[in-house]
Length: 323
Image 1 (cartoon, helix red, strand yellow):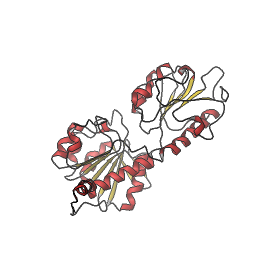
Image 2 (cartoon, helix red, strand yellow):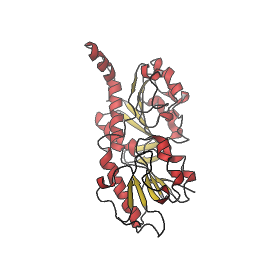
Image 3 (cartoon, one colour):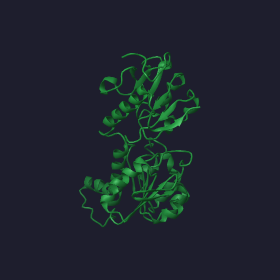
Image 4 (tube, helix red, strand yellow):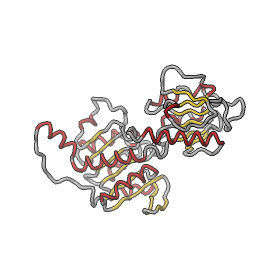
């Protein structure tokens, strides 16, 4: 492919770094030089020639930002995650005008599926059944249903909306929605974060989908947890640091609250951490996004974004701009 596209002026960087082999993505626009880099120690080309950088998926923040200091001509940094906290700290050092885009839409279905899975498994006692199966114990009893319960979704963006799509067929009594700012949707009101104190005592299940920002870091602290009703379930498919682990531990160890966590703080959770053995806690190892749905959707996103860049059109899902 040629080294200069219609989206780049002569002399400007036109290399594209992809964490998926370029020949595995049909329909990539011509006019760019594509390189495969998925976090290997050696870079595939001179970073200074990179104009469009796609961050390797699930390789951690150290790998994510490793080439950025040398990408002196980069114009686009594209993550394959909805959250951008692993690269956001590098934005101020990027060339002025460089845009940071997230992968809104890629993980909605998979993350929402897991949120519902964790909710149902915890309410219906599936972890207890799995443990009982190993000893052949017939563990009967009455368990909470999702039907007729009130669910609070904290972080009502694309993923939060997808969670509600999957909740509704299970006939909850009410779905409450919270986002950074209040608004009205076809389904009803979305409350502002300031309304949380009033809403928490009403919820049987609280599902966290919010991005990690300075506003949401430690959002679920002692005060938040104290307002949750006795026996309520906290489900976290957001980021581990949204929850204050030290505040959560006594609540679950006492049995007052339950928790189903796809993300933790720290992460990975050390084997000796008491959260592993706390009663009423279900932990999955940050698997909300990596499913068979990921790669086809990620490829569609990259094809679309690179097509826009080639045409000189505006990119979608821009969450930050440098400088």
